[in-house]
Length: 90
Image (cartoon, rainbow, N blue to C red; front, side, top):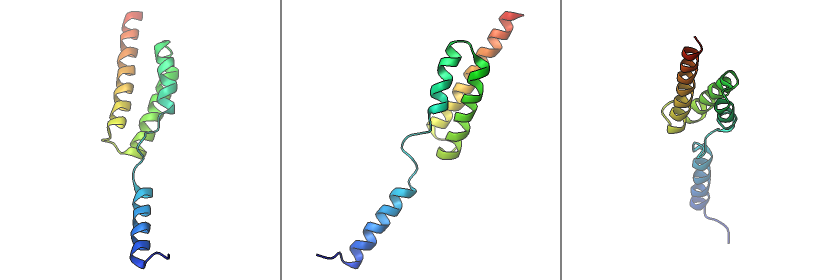
């Protein structure tokens, strides 16, 4: 049984809405790699990965998405740990 014109339009607009929807998961690989470096105290290797994660999430999800803000927080915590470490080394 062929689809009516209105059914085809409804199916097409539903498909179009689904491909324009923002992703339900956020870009994560840089953050996944940065965590172990940070835990090992390898801040210089963790920082660019956290920065990349923040950039990617900001581009894909927007600046106010919770995952983007979590990336911003991760980077801020890294900077805080670096400052504490620098203070102890002096």
